[in-house]
Image 1 (cartoon, rainbow, N blue to C red):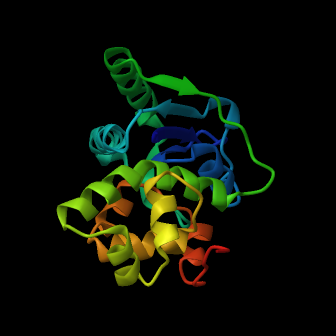
Image 2 (tube, helix red, strand yellow):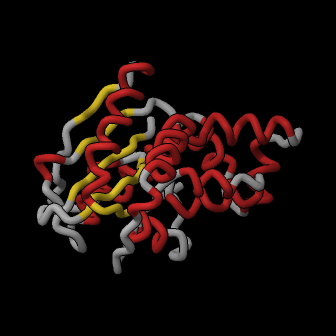
Length: 201
């Protein structure tokens, strides 16, 4: 699953449009920098990463003339509040046509990057397996190229538990890193990629 969210600032001056595989986790992180009106946050379940990418693109283009640059993480995706109703109308129309559902925002007391990594695995595991087969690689061969264990590859392809670093290694070897551009990855996850984490095996 993948989601698009609209988050208005509590002072009514601007709102943010973004996408994420774990929207509550992402928004909880952003609340460290921005004071959102959490009672008005709208989160849409777009079902697939591709759908979320398309809806976010529609919203960004529709509101592009109202862009408002903000200083912190995600600051290029804010728009002045006079475009808010237009964005909401677009989302309502798209939801009606595609039967997308909205979900409530639940603020998390503590960010959980591991949970978001799991959602990324769910989003990409089938594409990883398809790409491996396209290249005629066995799981063992892919593991060797990525400098990981065969067990790790099995976990990823079967939607199992792994680390963000392992995902980066596999996607890099398969030339699938572009997939990350379709998601909004949180800063804690980016940091995890540089720690050379590995699973207990």
